[in-house]
Amino acid sequence: MNTSVPAGLRAAAPSRPLAGRVTVPGDKSISHRALMFGALAVGETRITGLLEGEDVLATAAAMRALGAEVVRAPDGAWRVAGRGVGGLVEPADVLDMGNSGTAARLLCGILATHPIFAVLTGDASLRSRPMRRVTDPLAATGARFAARDGGRLPLAIEGAHAALPLDYRVPVPSAQVKSAVLLAGLNAPGITRVEEPEATRDHSENMLRHFGATVTVEAAGAGRVITLAGQPELRAADVVVPGDPSSAAFPLVAALLVPGSVVTIAGVGLNPLRTGLLDCLREMGAELTVANLRIEGGEPVGDLTARCGTLRAIDVPPGRAPSMIDEYPILAVAAAAAAGTSRLRGLKELRVKESDRLAGTAALLAANGVRVEIEGDDLIVHGTGAPPPGGGLVATQMDHRMAMSAIVLGLAAAAPVVVDDVAFIDTSFPGFIALMNGLGATLVPSGPG
Image 1 (cartoon, rainbow, N blue to C red):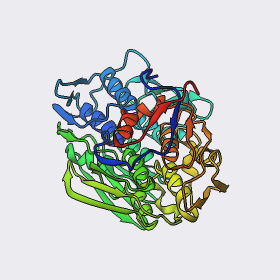
Image 2: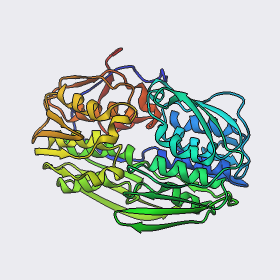
Image 3: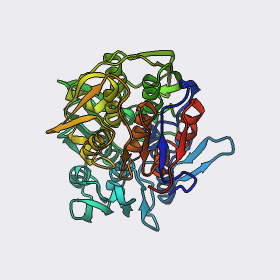
């Protein structure tokens, strides 16, 4: 745990509007993949803008343990000397993936078709999360998996010695499951095929092409069919990691809620399969503008400006979940300050994140005077049309996004909000508290939560 960050924190309405131009850490999803694909490529990959949070550093350590050379250069860029597809070596020790479900599940795909033995573990939160959604389909490659009850970590993996390609229909939208199957297909002969019922974030497909793999994508109703030609020779390719839209969500919503605020977040990834939150906020009446739109490393990037204004309630369709699965807690905070009753539909996937985010989001709002209900997999938020009452203590359950959402609520609320533990914020957004204070917030330690 990062002891440089106070255990607890008090967030209160700032004395002045939030203002400034900032950058947020690199996209976490792209950072994980850049390290993994760099390790599977032939040659040296240079990565700039890599998120240096605890989750991504755990991925760097895992790829190093599997035989790749992974070093941080003096200029802040990262250099990965890969071993080629099929060239990973058996690790000498357990691979600790920290708090990252993405890293753990994607690595399961890579290891499933490498003929080596490895054991994955993680922190207490990750060890409570289900892995069978990836290990069940991956077992069809010939890999063997042994885990605790419910398919939870620690997980032992014996990779297939004669891997089989997969033809798999993902039962529910999941970029992690889709990516794990595609990564397994890299070291299997023939064609690996994945069908997804709804389009999910496509960073894996984009980056596979960037490194030289043959990937095709075809529409299939509301979803897509992705095919990958197995056993390619991936070639090292430099990667520029854009700012993480999931991290940008927090200063963005804070700017929309704190009166008079205008904040610009430069260099944010704007992949259309990641911008569901922006769609929702615009439907709520938010004033959002994009400038300097460009393409970097196959991903659209731009400078996003948010200006405070009045928000109205929204009915979010379940089909939007894949494009904003990590942003529902902060959207719920925006809904708490909006006029009217919002309904966020189809949030079953939130129950198996770093914490039960559906229950946790409801508890966060209720502890701060916001009327909220859960009906099935829907979250109903009765907005105040004014600053939410606040004044509560939020138990984050070791969930970084819950902690940041609670902090933003405190900045917008009538009474300060106390967050019990903010140490885990560093898993995805190192420097978050300093960044917010630089914009005009006053976030101070509250002592142990």
